[in-house]
Length: 465
Ligand code: SAH
Ligand code: F3S
Image (cartoon, rainbow, N blue to C red; front, top):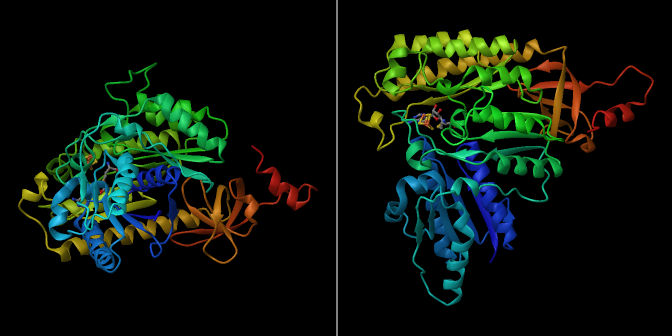
């Protein structure tokens, strides 16, 4: 009765949260499965950012509830943003759900499962559902466990929770609460432990990492708390690459732009959410910057690192967005020439101010704008990938490629590369000559030095720490 399957919807933070819960459960003797069929406990870690994400999880739970009727011992539960957003009202629709745990209470999942199991062991036929959506001081410090065993070349590290901004379309401040940062030494310790277990790359996660430590960790030598954190992580032996997501244009100051030049491990790749290229729409969204300010940040980053890679988040079809507004988004999109982007059709979230606004656009318009931006993205991405053909890229080898017997890894610019090689290369930094490119991936061969050393030796020497 102790096999658990966790299905995760949504962003990297959810992935990280699921992993931390899995790790806590494993410590208590549960087995974590990667398929649901055999599981005794199935948890859905949910997302609320768009309606579609909520509907998917609700549909899935409907199916699980049916299975539970055939097998009453099955325990099913919701965690995460939709649990926080909808709470006990989920039970109106899905009365069979055993557990609903909000975003500040993940770490109580083991104790709740124990409680449900023991009620069952006592023969209580239908134990009442547990719903916990409390706020908890210090809960940001609880997402720190990583699964033992599976060696992760690249790991996520949660550095803060919540967001104090009030973008009018966004449900996140409601589901994740206000900003709470973990102390620098605690994060450093977590990264050191990961490094000791073979992790070579960390991605620092937060809803708004440019606000990290605000009001708690004072500026030092002209550097904000987030840059101080990056500097500390730069010092950690064994870690070769640092990434982070997501910064906010408002808090993206010169100290952070300079960090890309100063810190060797910080990869030249920035995810900088834009949302819209129209000042009028930015204002309606309550995003406190202009397209000009955004382009200034891009320019200062390009001054710091000329071939910086950029990715972004964009919402198309915000209420009242005209063709002209959208055209400004396209223009800016081309001006920055994003290498990657998440493009979302606006989805009204009940409880957010934008949901009350007039001028919601028909889905056909949203879809058409979505397609036009995707087309631009494909062109940009292909152009960037083709420009890398013939070059030698430093690739961090992550694991076997799904394509045949090859390996896959990523460049510092976060481009996926497939190449032939043996498993022992996993976790190493390998020079790969790119000889072919598609929109989504690069293909190449490891570079063998021209000296008289046997190829085998060259390959293993590149893995030296
Ligand atoms: N600051 C967070 C944003 C979380 S939401 C982060 O970057 O991690 C992720 C993205 O979802 C947002 O940047 C936005 O582009 C999109 N999004 C948020 N609310 C939305 C809505 N109501 N409809 C469509 N897309 C939305
Ligand atoms: Fe959402 Fe805006 Fe914060 S997009 S997470 S309210 S910065």
